[in-house]
Image (cartoon, rainbow, N blue to C red; front, side, top):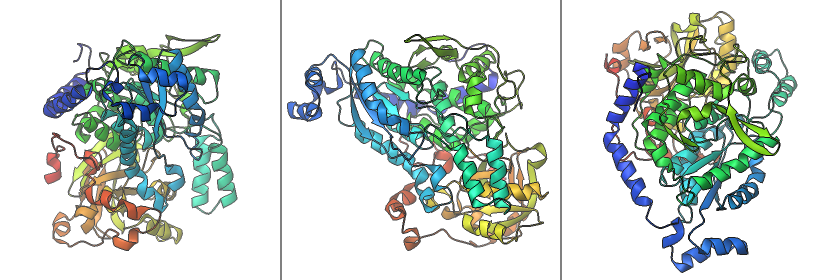
Length: 624
């Protein structure tokens, strides 16, 4: 499974992941292989009426082909809508993909659509309480699209936060089908991210008007394509490529360019090739194995990616029968160097990263350091070194050529032996307040340990009101924002708190945040112990904390502590989660079943049962 050059910690984490997942992975693969069937095409066993329904609306030539058994049929599952800038380019993809599939000897049908909400729009709004749940709705929607047994392969169209993990989880439930993700690319660079952050903070201090803030935001988010900062959406793109589910070099090519168009057509052709009929059968359930998951974790850490993937990668792995834990991520983080400075971890955006060498160089330097598994299956063949290549148009011909062997901008992207930091900046915190994760890649060393009195809020709006009224001025504090976990209200992102916390920190106050909610891939310079589990709504320790309790957030030793543990244990709950009619509005009432059944954060915060899956490992320090 590993080579002699593998880093010993990466090898050890992979080995224990394989061992821990033995039963669950075997059960998953057994289901996948049974579902593959023995016929030449997926639709072979459909009854005549079933099959006729499946091609009734097709063109005559496609009808004839679908009646036969030799041509592979691809399912297009799209998250298109024209409200998300990242997904708006998908409007034109289905006809392009269909034509490309036909030219490659196959067929394609739009099998279904999945919802795609924008966390940027719903930040601080009630709609954000549906965001994390939407991942599992997307997975279910993907399963519905693929459930017709008409398809021999899948093309998944998605980019942003919960959409890509949801699509992948859904596809893994049809693990016998080969799957290719089709990206849309980032918008061109707009207002520099550092300037956007400066104006946001000025507005939080009352020193910039709403009109000035809106002008800055509109100059930053200005066209079709993915937002250019390195949040969850662009972390998704990097991870799909590192997992071998994108074509090499396709993640960060801008929309509307000839190269982008050529890559879209090539994705369909490749999907045809990796079907059973295409001659290179590559089922996604076999492709996504323990080594692939470890590679995704390493890539996330080396690039300073989104903390949301401490949830999503766990859920994705479990969908493939692989029992990934936060401890695996934390142990990898200790040895994986930080090689990228992309906003919010630096001033550059993903276009700058791509120009500096991008994923091709990142793969090259991490492979050279023994931090990635080379011996993995991808949609383009065996071996991750295939992803050190870059796509190039030579006239009308798309080809792949070897990528750079040196970074073109050391302020953005560095080799593994000259990192920005020796570790990936992700750590698991444990202690009497529970287990949490913290991302320190954008946190200055002097702010990585904070001990201060707690100020407790059961709603982020109450914190913002206290800030606006000046009640947080001139005091060190640990803001405890609780009842924000998966079972409480869907675990919303609390990114709207970042500018206010940044203001307090810049004034010289020692500040940190502790929450059972999320802070997203855009969390930045303020230390944030997030995803605290067990969550307050399920009786976790945060439910008993009170104003004035002295709390320590220690990102150096991995400790999340309260000074008077005995008082915390003996105290009754000091707050409560919303309930009943308090969830009415913005569709939240429709998700009561999700709130009642969702699992804990360290198991991926999923509503899906994990069959044959071992429970998450509980760190000994939690009981100290």
